[in-house]
Amino acid sequence: MFGEGPNRIYNAITVLFLIFTVICIVLTILFAAGLMPVPFLAPRSMAIPQAAVLPTSTITNTPPPPTWTYTPTKTPTPSSTPTETSTVTPSLTITATAGPTDTPSITPTASDTPTATPSASFTPSMTPTGPTPTFTFTPSPFPFAVRGGASGVVFTANFANTAGCAWQGVAGQVFDLGNNPVHGYQIRVTGSGLGQGGAGVIVGTGSNTIYGNSGWEVAVSGQTSNNTYFVELLTPSGTVVSPAVQITFPNNCAQNLALVNFEQTRQYP
Picture 1 (cartoon, one colour):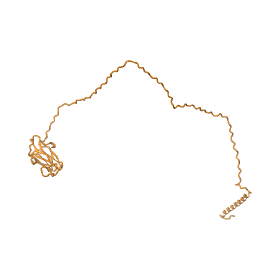
Picture 2 (picture 1 turned 90 degrees about the horizontal axis):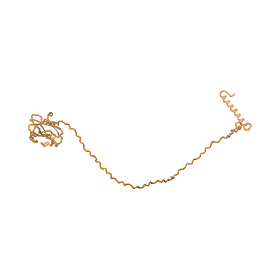
Picture 3 (picture 1 turned 120 degrees about the horizontal axis):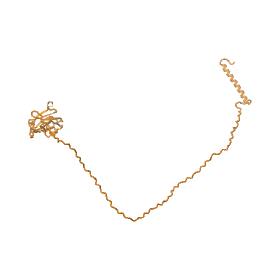
Picture 4 (picture 1 turned 60 degrees about the vertical axis):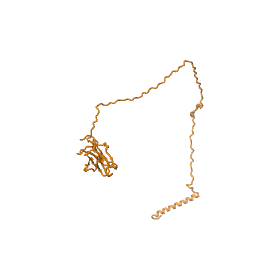
């Protein structure tokens, strides 16, 4: 009736829509003619609610609550103006009565108390008793020494030759107990560059009379320097009879000559 295959479904739906359309048209005509009321436009009947019945309140004679009565107490207000109260002080009247007159006595004046003056106190110290030490003089083992002691070496400028500053040397004289020139003794000078193997240089007294009758001289350098040398006196046989005198030159042209004089200090055979 409705065809075959899928068309059957479409055809059925079409028929249904046609039926519904016809029904709607019929109902519309009836509603429009007033033959049938519109269901969803008819007024609804509303039920009138009953008035609510309120309970009736019963008034009971209840005694009223107690009433509190406050009676203010009057506080006295202090007065800002003080009231002066005059007080009468009785005066004491003294009546002088004639009596014996006191005779003032002389109060002695305190005299100055002498202050004790401290006196120096001397405490004797104990002095040990015993023999007085005796100092023993030990003579020098050498019968000759440098005249003038340790300060007997005098530095001066070279005056004995024409070398001037291009020279440095040691010179002097030798005297006996009677301050007489000593001949035949030897002077040995040792130091830097003097003699082979440091043996030094030996000259005899009286070999250079420019310095005196027993004068001697040893040239130690051809220029000034601060080298140190030692000088000593020997007998003709080579016995050392004076301590070795140390001489250090000041490397000064005005002090390139050292003068050393020996003198006898005790008897020597």
